[in-house]
Amino acid sequence: MWDEDVDDALRADIQDLTGEELADEDWDGAPDGAIIWWRDGDDEDTLSDTIVDASAVLDDDAPFWILTPKTGRPGAASSFTIRNAAKTAGMNIEQPLTVSPNWIAVRLLHFGGREH
Image 1: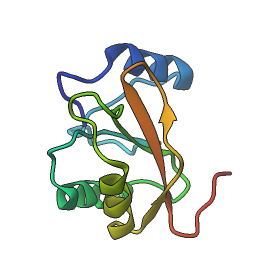
Image 2 (image 1 turned 90 degrees about the horizontal axis):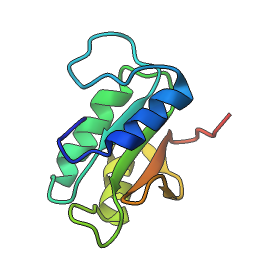
Image 3 (image 1 turned 30 degrees about the horizontal axis):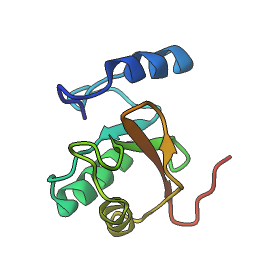
Image 4 (image 1 turned 180 degrees about the vertical axis):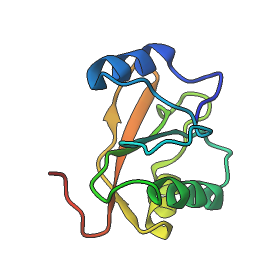
């Protein structure tokens, strides 16, 4: 999911790292992974639904990340919201990582899944 406040430099870094262009939610190919840009104020149930929809087209071990503004920044989603939405969608979360000056990333794994 993309919006006008995403970190374009971070997107470019991800593309450089993966060697692939990032696609938006309207892309109809088979994705290698998922990145969801999520902001506070978006409904927790909607996040759960989004996770379910995105994971339905991914392999169980495909990388799946939720990016949200850092705590204290406008739009920062609470870890409680992300954890609950992931749990409802059948996934666990890993420890958040700082990925840019304004964004953190949380990796999601299917229940029982582990990083390979």
